Length: 123
Image (cartoon, rainbow, N blue to C red; front, side, top):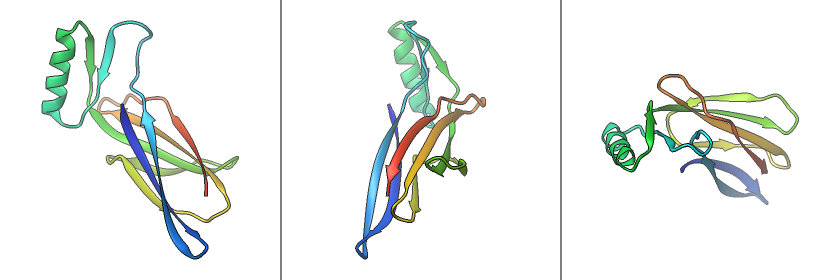
């Protein structure tokens, strides 16, 4: 399972503090069928893993990871786009004493989007 890392900087009594949250990004599945979506931005790894899983009886779907869509809001507010990112991390400096929500989803090279993964952060 791929992780998306949120890195948040804040001030605690005039001392900078950094908090890391690792958000698991689940792979899409089709119930109990033996179908698996393989996503990797390294083509040799994608090919090797696809071949191995196919040899174990899985129907392997590949498109290749394109990027992640990241959005943030103060709880109850409007979602603000942080854009599409190819890396698996984002770093932000945020005001204290607020609760934020982040949502992240993957998009493959064909344009399919995964489900949003939601994380709440109290700063």
